[in-house]
Image 1 (cartoon, rainbow, N blue to C red):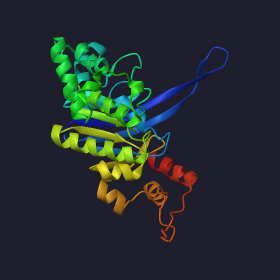
Image 2 (image 1 turned 90 degrees about the horizontal axis):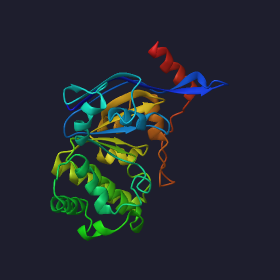
Image 3 (image 1 turned 135 degrees about the vertical axis):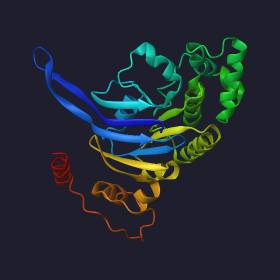
Image 4 (image 1 turned 180 degrees about the vertical axis):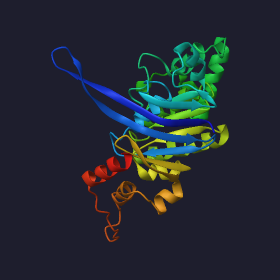
Length: 285
């Protein structure tokens, strides 16, 4: 077991009025529990606003959880102070969704990839850092000579490869891939997914793969967790989720996937979100 989340919660305050007081809360994540094993890819799916990204950022402590417990490799990191959490940053990394916004436009690619090496002082000389940068670019199938270029000189797919290389710079044990192919064209998306699969095999990576695209998650995940309005409604291996879903929301998600052949008929699952929410509330109570 590499990562265990117990009853994770994240509420965002809603402020208003003359004194900007808290008027209420948005319950982005409510009582989510997950376990992720070493070398596993866990797919986290759900519609926009279901809390997927919030879960990933809470795990990495990019935002502070409201409640619950996060255990990484046997160590409770939920309330670790920043100076104790910093050494763990080498082992916990993220691939951001937007390859256009996640790279500093004023830095060359070489400087972007060398920055984590400098911060954590893993490669003490410029020569060692340059060699590591070249290795990282080759790892994501880019020419090492591209290190002298700036992000605006690359296509979207190439920028996302650079983002993946940056996440791999410190040889992490766990990576959150947050919608990392959603902003890419379909053909480029397939290339990036194949790259992630190869890196997982060669480096033994463990990933939380966040996406709203069911086909993408099916192609890369060992297990799949389904979220709805901050709650985890189903968790099973990928084959079971896609062949024999148990939860009504999972069935509705799968039923809503577009079918390219208009002659093919698929039984559509009737979906009543209000009735489903009432049933969830009753179960929780």
